[in-house]
Length: 138
Image (cartoon, rainbow, N blue to C red; front, top):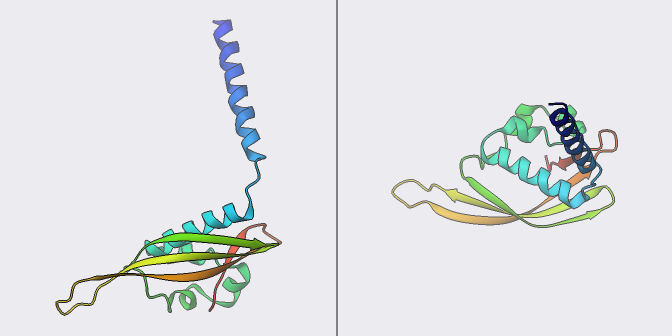
């Protein structure tokens, strides 16, 4: 019985140490921004605009309310997915080149049209929070 407790204790310690080591693996800015772009666009595609709004810089959110942010957004429901072509970073700024795929409902008996468009998004590393934020064109 005592031997099993020692084995479980050692196993738990090993899992803790391995998990702790993962914390020290630094992600590159490109990897972090890639994840943030995907998360933001998932929120936009799914219509979770408040979540997408949280990816804007704190300064943007101080100037523009959620209502101001959400008014010009017109693609919810037609956006289907994105692909990230490239992310280029210099110091504390990254530019993500993306392809946005959409299905457009024309109505009046016409079939839906699938389309795609290329876009570039700017992201900035916020010095106070240490987080990467989307820079809105608004």
